[in-house]
Image (cartoon, rainbow, N blue to C red):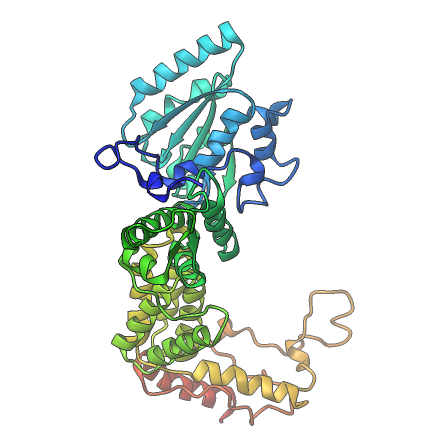
Length: 456
């Protein structure tokens, strides 16, 4: 076991060479070391065949890797290059231009013609490339002069030009789950490339690092490295180097300047905080609603789970009091799935504020519950004959559809006829609009319609 301070040696400190970041040192060297992404790395999958350099078209196709930060895009690009002994060139769309791309293409042509060696061009953040810059990639990709492996956190349908997309495999990567992030951390503590067992990670610190990672392996490793540095500074002088230094929750909190939120996503805290969140929106307390939103986000709750709760609240608690609340909530749910954290917090906050401040009505919610209760209670007879389907052979003989009045033929667009089954006609009273918000404007029409349709 190396002396623990060797793991954080710097040119200014011990005089030893500066080590690469822990996330770089722990980059998987083979497919077997990759955590997560089982779906796209399954045996026989296009990405696996590309990494393994399998024969045929799939072994040399270019690929667009789309996914949140820390899901392994750079790692997979390195594996594509190294597993089949290819030449690897890395460019960043932030700094590279068309001239750099053309230089890579020329070098790739020489490698292919002189040494029969393929070149892998890894282009990070391809969504930052302009159309003209992406156009410069097309000839090399078209002729397979290079194998392009491009990474993006943005939706390629909008960020990558269509000709380049059509010539590449689109590989969608997903955030790591808690178990996979835990595996990444534990491996980094044990592995000689990482902390080499010079440190011991407490359960509380591990749970905190997993929560704040948000499924981002790089963020988890960076936080672990920072926590180890704090633990080393806190270790007593003259300690026995053969005994691992414990990384505690306090070390982890200090390292990432973020206190641990007491929150178990599978236990009571999960349900208690989620319940308080919903009830605060329903109760129109915007500060409380934002507090519980922040509490969930800081604890590492899946923002997609939160977005789904907001959508439900927009219909259950706001309803026709403000129909646009549901539009905001649904838009937020889709946006969160595309954007991810940390920016997703802004989108969620907007939807929460809309829900919370909107006039409230549960009339639609109560209405469907009342209708379901009647069905379960055995009420609801045959569909009236004039409403039954008449578009099939024999329907006219059964007089299905006979007497039906087409609403658009009426002057006011409403046909006075029976719609409910006989046993519910004149008695069903499911929807009761409130006098709040937009729904108050519906009351007059609702009253008129009830009289027009059946005198209720």
